[in-house]
Amino acid sequence: MKDVKVLGPGCKRCEATEAMVKDAAAKLGIDVKVEKVTDYAAIARFGVASTPGIVVDGKVVHAGGLPKEDALERWLQA
Image (cartoon, rainbow, N blue to C red; front, side, top):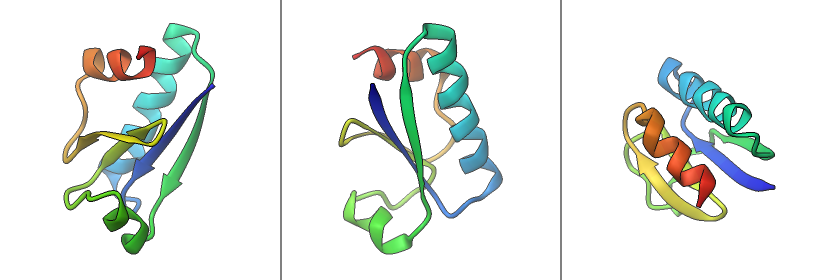
């Protein structure tokens, strides 16, 4: 199971990113645990200044703006 964190204050882009992660995981048949991290201090500890950010299995893979679908699938499959 992949551990995915979506970093962001809860804005529309952050919510869209969370939905994209869940949709991509379902499409690929990958079990994911998605956690939303909204605390600014916690987000800063990941070194992310621009949200939404995505952390997969402890590694920051994306920050700022909506991710591209193909990149998201690649991160989940890694």
